[in-house]
Amino acid sequence: MSEQPGDERPGPYSGLFGAVPDTYGPRPGPPPKQVTIASVISIGLGAMCLLLAVLALTSAGGQISEVLTGSRDNAPVAVAAAMLCAVIYLVPAIYVRKRHAWARYLLIAVAAMGIAGGVLSFPAGLLGLAIHVALLTLMLRQPTKRWFHHR
Image (cartoon, rainbow, N blue to C red):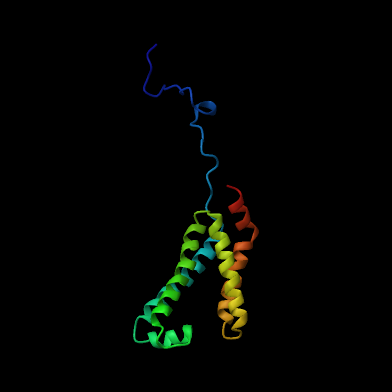
């Protein structure tokens, strides 16, 4: 009996009923909306830190440096602080969507520090306080926890 082109038989390592076995386990689904929203918030905050760093390099650098460090002559310190702030927001924002648990924990820590800063600078820090409370809430919601713990 001659074999036709569509009559291939499964090889010795084929899965159930000739299907290709899934050797890598279950594939993760898309992140829950809480993770996506938290990532977008964190990217937005990181972008604002980058903008602050760029503005600190302009003629407004003295004023920005005075607000951030207390001295008009510390523009390089203000730029470095703003760049560090951007990294602290942007790196976990990228990796939290890739399901890295350390990024979730880092966002929780950053949100907690943002809440502390908002409380200490109340009422001027009310918007920052609200944003960081939202970020913390999103990272602690049940769908977010389940998505990170079911690898």
